[in-house]
Image (cartoon, rainbow, N blue to C red; front, top):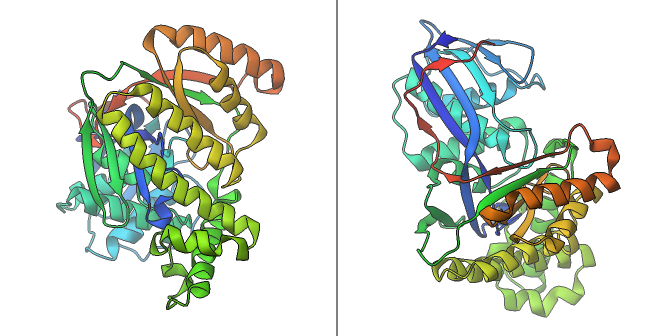
Length: 388
């Protein structure tokens, strides 16, 4: 065991509905969960950043006071990305030395966003910088967009920072207004089932950024068809376009763009309905909307590997599951489900058996785990890390 001065826990997140719309300034929901990333660190006496990982072999070392270099395409890029985003706002003089560890397989739970949030909090603490929650969210998101190169919104970071154990996060990513909707007493208990397909994925090698651009082009086309002023493409969002304009112009657009827009507008409606279902304790409706969200992701957003689609179909056929969908971008990674607590083991056995019958090549890498909603990223008292 190594003893460090500070320990940050930054949770993974799941999104029951509101997927693929934050980059278009849509409505989203989410939970932080009780699994995530642990970062133990001590501020360095100078600008040196020296980090080890319990998940990867190589050590990263760089100077936080030096100009940010190009990406090295390894796990250290997340620390370098946070340095890049923070240095745009603050003078950094002290680095950190420590160790980082993720508690679940990478893929679908926004582990990259959890790591970025942890580094933002660590570098800020080391340099005596006080950040509001929304500042942590925006700095972590900026590091991912501008340095890592993933054109996402703020859903992941918002869930990770703002999440509460006893509530659902509901956020308007256009206004950045949010509510934590406390779980009503009438809502049945549930666990969050996570089904790792066994197939890892990188968003940077998927069609994630392509989908973002397709949504922007769809919005641009609709604004042009309706005679409205155009902005630069990178500042154009589907949220700018009323649904009635979409209905009037959808048949004039290439089908792929119309489907992307259909997902956005239908997901906007589902989030509204889902929030009402949660507030009234209607888990059956909340779960059904999760399933419908995933169906739209498959049909309209056109994401989902054969492995993830197979898990989704199995979840729909399995007793004890209220609802579920792809987690994360939905190109590989994982599926998540809301599961009745008493059904967890039966769900694990049934889906594992049926999935591996279809995909026996993933026998060693397919995993199922169950967790609960949890609180957002925070400093914790335990400052002893496992031995790297």
